[in-house]
Length: 145
Ligand code: DQA
Image (cartoon, rainbow, N blue to C red; front, side, top):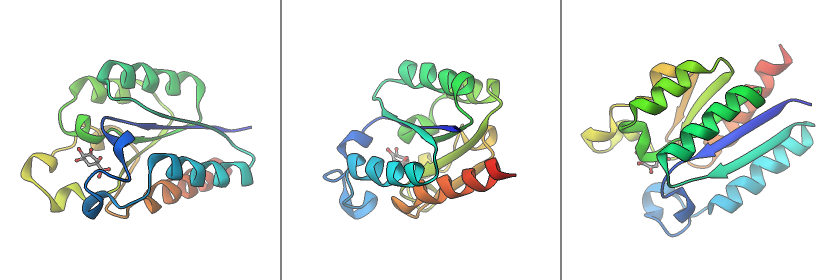
């Protein structure tokens, strides 16, 4: 059975109440349930996790490299700051998609730079929680190849 890891970075545990005009009203639990319904229907194993800690996220990305067939990563604000995360993503060779609920390019200047984008296979931004499902669909198509 293929395995997909979906990892979420800081403050995404606050989805639902956090700036809903930017991030939408879905909670992270609702997003996880929707992802799980999708992976269950596709006979795929899913690990879904969130952390507010950079080192934890790096440990989990390393684990994805060792244990998963593909990674969906919303690294939240660490996207814009973490060279360590860039290094970890470069070190793993599984299929990787960066997802953001909002479109960072249409927001503050400091969000325009991503240390993640140059180290992943694809990027989905600005489509809200649909971005996670679209990333899963892209992974299914890739794994079927
Ligand atoms: C985010 C965008 C980031 O710029 C921000 O720091 C987040 C969430 C998104 O999903 O839109 O925390 O990754």
